[in-house]
Image (cartoon, rainbow, N blue to C red; front, side, top):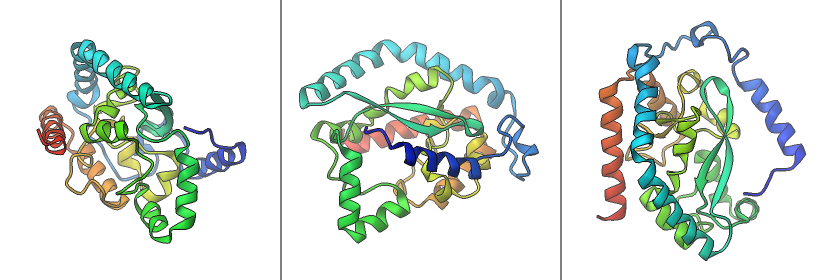
Length: 241
């Protein structure tokens, strides 16, 4: 994806400095928020063990699938992967890895589309996504429908920036739309989660924040396994299998 200008980066950095927790190394309950995340054995140790075990078991198959998808994208034209900044646990910024699903000049096209269409601008400002996005390529549409574009995020899980299940990874510029983010910053963002598998996947950020708070306060092994199974069901319904 195109690299933002230096002025844009400085503006985003100033915004993050104003909105992120003042001391991201302090425990969440000491930052002035009333939110208290689950802190049992699974939350502190078991969840990370599940992430690593799942990746080690699935990696051989995942690498083959990622390789085939990357080849299809290269044949369609352009790079196969892209990275984008996201906010992780305690406000830490990291680079999320995905298979590219849009045209190479997606950011520039978006600015032109939003400038020309007020209704599209309103939709984007409210949800930071477009229900019918013309920038998505033919291969990219298949990858999104099957959620295969998310597979490279297994690397982010392996490095500890993400988890299999958790809040949807947030872009820095989305923070003002999210509202109070204590529940989000309490956990590693996930490849899937409560908000992602909801029928209201296009909902506004207030619903997204509530879903993250509900998940963080009731975190459990049973809940994570249930969400992983629901994710499989959602993917099957999207593909029509």
